[in-house]
Length: 242
Image (cartoon, rainbow, N blue to C red; front, side, top):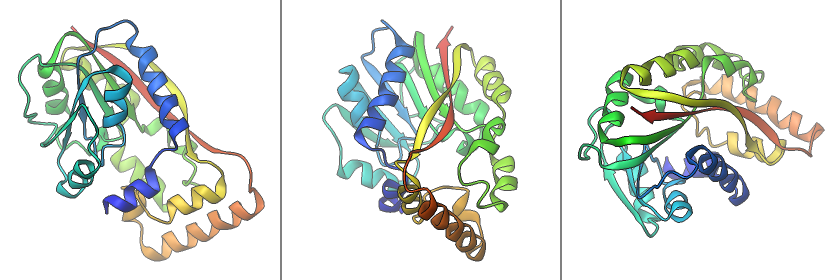
């Protein structure tokens, strides 16, 4: 449910600011008037992107439930549309920046989605992508507690090279890639509270008994380690339309 997603995956203001800073540095002095927030979900980035860049943000999301929650909290400078990455409801060369956060692995046809991103980007436009990758599975905080999640992650995530090759084939050149530390929880207790919502496409696939066993292990970890943020690496790619 959208409300559970926000509780389980939402950002603290300072965390959102850190990611906006990362995006700002990646864009540099490029003029940004229109942004596509592709797979915008409940809109956690949409309003923030509009405010940071003084741009018009178009959020595209296939889930009606997610979109309804995003509409409920629509910010100034944001329009929201139901649509799919493989067939974007936007004109050719109509946006300056495409932003994609943790949804690349959900695209049904990744090559078609990349081609659509290139189609709607103006020449020289940027695409910023936050993604989970195969290379980082062992570094995700919940994997040791939910061993069944490892095979599911291997089935659903793709490699760093696959992401780069997919966008390159669509005419998007890789400008930079890096691992960005991202806070998964302010501390282990906060992380456990977030996990309780199962607002993760992998955790929701676990059997209830497997989730309950793993969650109890996380809760015990929280009792022993009450301080310190839970941090995970997130792959961050910047591509340029050529």
